[in-house]
Image (cartoon, rainbow, N blue to C red; front, side, top):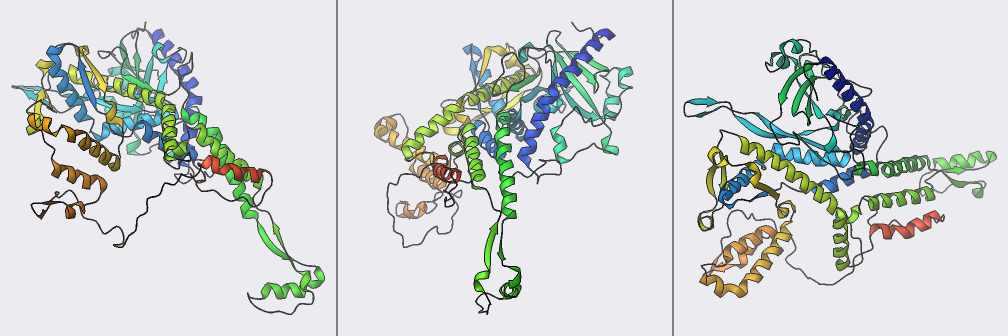
Length: 583
């Protein structure tokens, strides 16, 4: 148990925190190294130390970000007690409304990105908001917040066998020194000992150094770095100085039992707290491919064609050198001049680079197919099967993201629920009424939140995480119309009908063909599809001829490269560059 009044207790905690930070340094260094490779040499003077002509890590990160978290999630709230179901419905409306907040979504995207490089860390809690009045009483407002945490600014008990077993976990943050000196929640004597924090190097790798930061001099540099440490067993949150030696504040934790932090990882290591990240596995092949590309580039630049002759034929050589294309010159010995080629790329090295390039894309989950960069089979049907197999490969990662979002948003909803004063405005759908008038604006009041929060269970709506192209939406719309048509008499009996004007409007929107308005008429008049469909320039010649022909797709890049690699490895000089080689 931690005793805040005992100096030895603080000293023991300080030693443990410093040791864990030391043990985390290799992970911070690998994390920073992977990010340096992603940004390459053109981002800043502190990016990759060598050129990255084939940025495979950036390619993989971009594809996986889109696959794992394509857009903002939406939630539903399942309520165990049906009597309080309306409150759960309103709670879902409040959280879904807040998810349109750009800062919340940028935080979720940042944590997903951090997990691909190392571990995604996030903090959920409440922060001060605008004051508001209840009757004649002015109340200091609060609001929930979600912020990402870099691995640079993180510490946890590295002696634990899992993150759930850690006896402490926390993060570093920065505030102006003047603000810290005036903070009345800090111990008066302790805060007087605070000093401007220096940017520590050496055993404190920071990805923020990549953009060139070496400190913040001058007036704006008078900042202090503090640590907020959560002790699960004691139910305490401590605020410490940047060296862990000054205890500024101790507060009792009154939130969810797991504390203010959540973490996202994709591959755990048995008996260890730190996971394996995808970028860790990508780095070796990424570096090998780019090392070979730089070598081949040097070889290509050394390649040259020159004319050679014997020393006694210098006159002929000079005539040949100075003549122009198409000139006729008299030479004493035309056969004495020869063209020689030196240097050039090594064919086997080039083949090996291509093989590593394909291995990377395969080890990263078949990036060509996952990223839509090329087909991977000979027919469309086979492509669909291959896509399904690829999706199953990242299904485990997707499940982790969904579970992580569910727990993070559950914590966020908890803080909304526990606000004793504030009424939250939201919109809900009311059966019968909303069918005509649309969503109803209402409030989630403090009185409705008098029962325990955990009577409600938050669920991520899976469909809300799936990105759909306009073409896919148009196809779904057609399917709905085709399904509904046979039930037209039954629909009419229930007061339902298909709005064909809206159907054609959406069809024009999703297909980006506003000319649909020219061929649809109502009582002899062109149908007005609404102002949201803008006219575009004519897309093709008026005289067209369309031929529908089934053609099997070309071989995938890896298969297409195989014959060329085989030729190159055997020393063949006539290998032809296949389509789809580029990333």
